[in-house]
Figure 1 (spheres, rainbow, N blue to C red):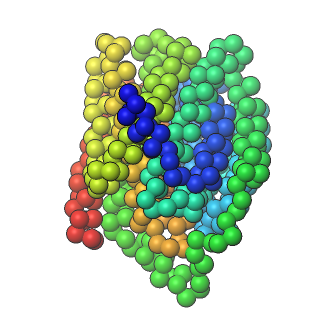
Figure 2 (figure 1 turned 120 degrees about the vertical axis):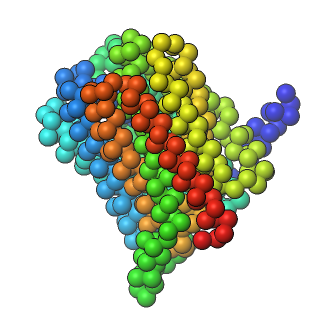
Length: 403
């Protein structure tokens, strides 16, 4: 027991105070992001949209996320990650408060498009901040710590949101989302100082060459496609699974939120020591990405049967382990591949891959459910993961030969 405790503590050592502060801010911000896991239910139950219309609105969520990823990368390279993080969270906070007053189809489409364009410009910036405030040796654990903080926030947020929805309705959630965004960025500005030394200075004579490097890197594009299919698989957990829990297994919002506790609890307890252990094994990053894709694929194939409640728990465990492997190591691969001074552009493509997958995953998933039922959707979703497995094997071979 003492050895387990020692190993657990060891997994947190050696990280800079800035990474700890960013993790704290991420926890506060994510704890307040209560409406996101219930957005599909909010649109269908509270605003009476059809699943097809909800799918289109959520597609704008993904489009805005893709725009935000691209915009955040460009702005990060131009102005630095620090300024982008500050302005992104500040504007997002006020936008979330205003979202509750919009109920028309097109109003929601464009409001969500704007909010996500601003909110997800934060993502490339925070990825670059990891490189600025950590060493190559502890980069994966730094990513893991920030993810742990985000997931700890998710443990509080959706559970509290389920209780609030049942007792007070949805409107209070928008106020909490907005206020926590604003509070988090005030805390960030106070605790974390902008580094004096820039990661790299972009000079005019290397801009064209660097752009060609970003967009002509075949190996990196294979990786981006893997991230896309991994996202197509994983985002069904957020988009269609809450509806599946409610319509097929008759769970209410609070009961649904308890499944997030399984996901978050495993991540909080196991991810950091798990990553610390794996880092010592010197396993290639691409092998972890392949394993993550396989676990996610299997998790959804198992849902093809819908007569046993326990399969929902098995599904969540498989997806969570896949998430613990997939997201830290795809992030690490992208950071390690990024060329000095153009980290924002590289991380923008990484963020956009998941944003675009959110667009298609939302729309395709809900359309399949509407027309063919949940079981066909799980078969299609499992196949996305299988495609990612095949591409991960290809990526592994290319990296092995340094292509």
